[in-house]
Image 1: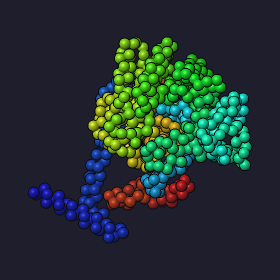
Image 2: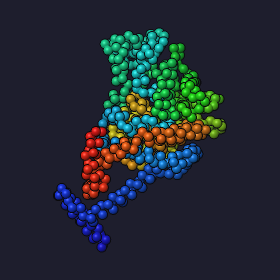
Image 3: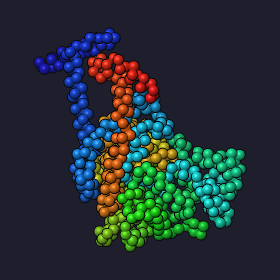
Image 4: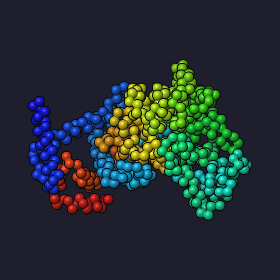
Length: 619
């Protein structure tokens, strides 16, 4: 009882100090109040530090797989060196100044930073920052979810319907459009003969005729196409409508993107763009029965061989040895149909099994696995779409156990790509039990037990921030479930998924994750963990994994040195001062009690004008 009375007395004293502080512009600072507040702040800081220690990038892995041991061994042999660690610490301090500067400047305009703000505007602004420019050069490891038809930049896709890109095939390119409106573009096709539309109100015309029917010529045509391709047109919050709108760019460009000679150019250009972003390895998503030439639609086996030839040719062109240690290499993941008939399931797995056998004949393996994806909203929760795949997956598992040297049996499912809870996200249960990686898993934090099971089974989540924003699955990154998964140490990787249709890059996703989603104290260790996870959860075999991580370590140490030189001591001194000033401007009573004391400690009065001048010059 005595302790309660003491605590009540202390509380009254603190309330009295709060009242005094609010009534007077320059209140006296009582030593006892300052001491109590400082002790309280110290306890709060301790709690924050404990939370950080248990979060992603900081928590120790309890169940280390063989692949994690391979990565740890390489890291311990190189980056754990004292000199490298010191350099890493120094660069981390500088990156955190830039990150916190972005956050503090963002808090000055909360309607944009904290509220619903067009993500394309966010990307445009972020690309001008020093932090974004540093992250472009950061070696990013692997892109584990790259759709063959949308993994390039938007600019690359917009170059497709031009004479320069099409070359000799320009005369064979036709545009599907409304009978009465050339600007109402519905699709493309490359053919020796004029194609015939199966829809009454649509017709095919030669590209050059449609292009120059526009009074603005080629530029006007490209501008119109750009408005169709970007996902800004998705105005529905979520659900089947959003999925339908998201499918429109694919539907319009399929005829160009899947024409074999054009697709080869797109793949090569995409890999070159990823190399410039310092990506080492790519897992390309593709579909059967889509690629064609002037004679026919390629069979599944021919489609597989097409992708393998293009990627192998690219790798050998850029690397003398053909190995991944100095450039980029890729593997293929085929997408299976979700929610169709039993016969379609059987056909897909028969084809996939044939490809597994075909791939086994030529080492190294190019076939990585298969993915299942499709719209979940509108599906009945009583009949999850992944259920019917279980017998086929078990059959493949049995086949794997009886055949040595087959490692291309990785299962990847898109699940929980919805906002609903136990209405349209039932596929998460199947995915956690069966998959190696899960795409999106947006509703996973709503299932605490399932989230713990995913951690126990070492399932990795593919996070696509720009895709979630573009498809209106998420409106405000500060409420994105990735933050909850970071706090709970769920294993994740970063992937842009459809950068062409989002007008984004992989660097954009890393920037958004670092500044908008991660906690303010999350540092370089989070970025490094996301990158190393992209190797760990990839479809590379252990030999490829070892070589890729060793190559990454070399690139990473070079990046550390260059970043340290770029962010000079003089520049960081200015940024640090600006950051401290912005922090002091924020209104927080518990800190403002000792604001005057802090100001005098950090900046003598004669420095105030200089600090203000720096802020004005760089705002």
